[in-house]
Length: 527
Image (tube, rainbow, N blue to C red; front, side):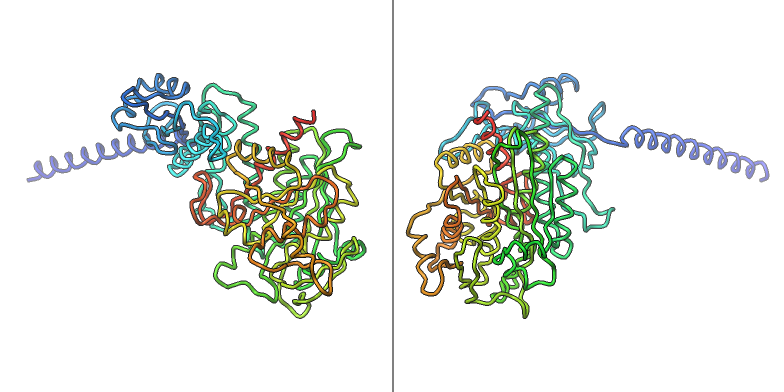
């Protein structure tokens, strides 16, 4: 028995040592894998839409990747019978080599170009969609670094990828946040165009962050500080005007709306100088209602939280100025950004109140729920007298009518210049963030100016709320070229059919890239 017991002990000891050695080996392998994949990388490549019975055609960089992995990419495409539809693809993970995951995404037709009916460059837009879909899929797989195939359009690939992986999750616990991966261009391509695309997308992401921040965390003073932090390091001058200054300058229409809130109003005056200081600037005016409750004409409680994004126009202006500086546009740009809250209180503006504007015109506030044009009126007049610009572009979530008409498909445009319209139409086709022109008929001007006891009404009569608001603003700009962009349907939450590289039920930051592209075209045409 003792001998048998000793044999059992020896066997048990041997098994224990074997288990320990196996555990050490597994632990060593896990540590090695963890060290190797401490920053796991993924890559996105494109495949074009299949042409009848011909074999699938991939991008040039996809061919390079296929060679590096022993032909597996083409094998997967054939086995899964990929048809190359834009944004649809396959994800392969657990790979060895430089990349731990590969996303193969459809880019649509090889010869896709500008589509007149859609007013959109489909080749560029398909690349945005493909790059965004691939980058987002790799992000959700935990990739810390994502390399993106330029697919023939490096600027658009950078835009799509950067917009797709951005998240507003600052109010989540750190462990629950989706990490934003580092983006790099994969393979051959124009590196300058890639960088330009990143600048444009990051500027739109800045506008998204400002718009999506809750109203208690994005008051006028907090917005002003955020603008200073974003613009001053880029060489853009930002002057923050206090309530005393606003009162001294008699910006009464702005103060009339602001006095309903305990938060003091501020006005930002920003300047970017990209050419000779004596050159006239393009003036941007961004509506900065950091929360629009509707005042005494209170909005419905259902969906009221989205009106934290009523300052989307101001956010777009900040993003545009940042991009203009990053791209070193050879032009001068000024911006006026009035910031306040529109709240009900004993001090709030009442229906029927009348205010005198800087140009001596009296405005009657027939409907306090239509406050945006009242907030913008005096700052618009001040900007013309102080900066004497060659062109004015005002941007804001002004009226609901444009949302009923266009939804999230395009931003409403009203302008006095056919040249401005053509340039905005071209810019929207390039960026994929389109605009649509609405009329400035005298019909609308007559409705807002024919009043018995005052010169101008803030509401007018009838259902065409966006056209009436544009007519009011148009009456305050007598001379220079002027454009009004109403992003009520595009700059706030897009619940229905959002762009594939943006997120549903989050603020969009639109039309930041379209305004940047417009200014880029304007600078090029002048130079």
